[in-house]
Image 1 (cartoon, rainbow, N blue to C red):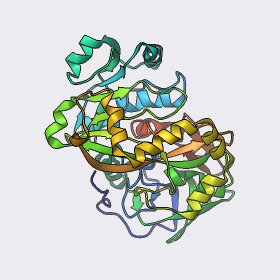
Image 2 (cartoon, rainbow, N blue to C red):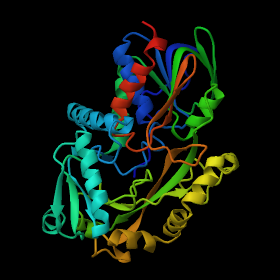
Image 3 (cartoon, one colour):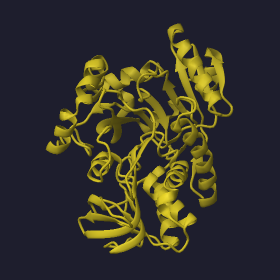
Length: 415
């Protein structure tokens, strides 16, 4: 995984005043700024990003999958925006010359007990309008993935892969080409709503905007609460570590191989994912992390840990899912456990076939009652809109999320 780089032409300080401010330079924030420029040509737009480079967190630390929209509850925002967003993203990549591949995906059942879950995914996918889904038997699975095991699978031929960091850079180019500014190394501390504007306080001073949209990922709850929004839900960070197949073993996987997930959790389990660069990733884990940027297990931030530990939902979640938490901890500490999980679907896989890859942080919203929020969540104050929960498929859905956000904020944007 390449480290994100600052966008060419990035400015070093934001304007003191602008029409619209977007906080967060990840895929969703950049897509929102891009859509703002399209809808409000001639207006001034400032994107404020806390890191030295855009796409430094979830947008640049992921497996690169363009999800089709299979898993999500029909009618939910995730379902609607993922299906629409994937179609838009394929078109966008074609227009911009960004490499993309519809490599297809198998969701594999290993035993009869998993068949009802697989059939439910088939039902959901069809209800969500996902094209081309079909149920396969073991012989048909072997035709698509010769090294995979399983008694049956759901095949999604239109699931694809892309380099989302490259997509983010393209969004940034669109914003700049429309006259918008992107300011990195600009940490936003909070915002004060006024009658006609919002004053955004940041590490480089302050910026007054007619309206602000916050797409702050792992820090979204803090900024929402600082702006007067409800503290529920709280963001808790989950660290997902990946392995990769050694180059000489990458031919074990042609596309994407996933397990049948637990429908009660917003995680998809250990899976095998071919990337647009030709690597095959194995993972991820889903370990509750001691920091919102804990790309290394040794990184601990007191405030992050305190906020997770003091949130009643954290303890209710752990009480409900302690067995799953113990399993994830074992996988995080022992790569053999990750390999063993993946080898259930790829029987030829051994410990010698893998090497360390990278880790990402999933900014997951957790309700006070201990429920892991399994949909996109937004909240509003007088002059701001906050994206409170946009993990996977947030990258896939970014263009559609941008349209949804601006439709929701239309009355505040003005003419």
